[in-house]
Length: 128
Image (cartoon, rainbow, N blue to C red; front, side, top):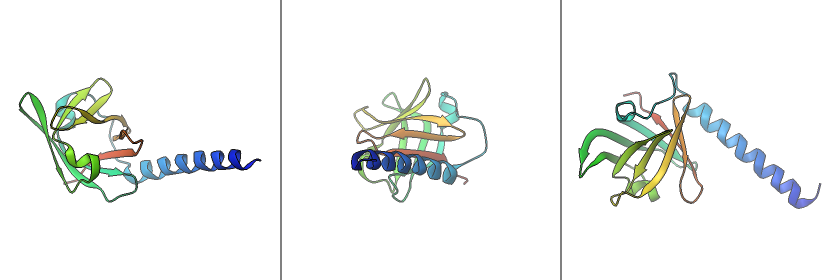
């Protein structure tokens, strides 16, 4: 194999392995989440790019016409989360201006999405 083909194969396998590790780490029983607000309201842990996770609380109450989201310990783009909304195949986190930060889709009780920079983000409900 040439160097570029070998590197491409390695990168592809590494990305696939990372997804399997994240899915195993976050595995939780239960059906996929639907897109009704009540099914998403509650406390969640978000893990992104191999960093320590942060907490997000998705509230069922509205403020300024938007469902409220509060983050704790989030860094980077996720630190700007202020609201959320259900979407047809999952839910989106929004900043104070209503701009979508990330949209998640459920897979076996875990929500997966990508930030604008391409970073994979996984979100699972907390046990408390």
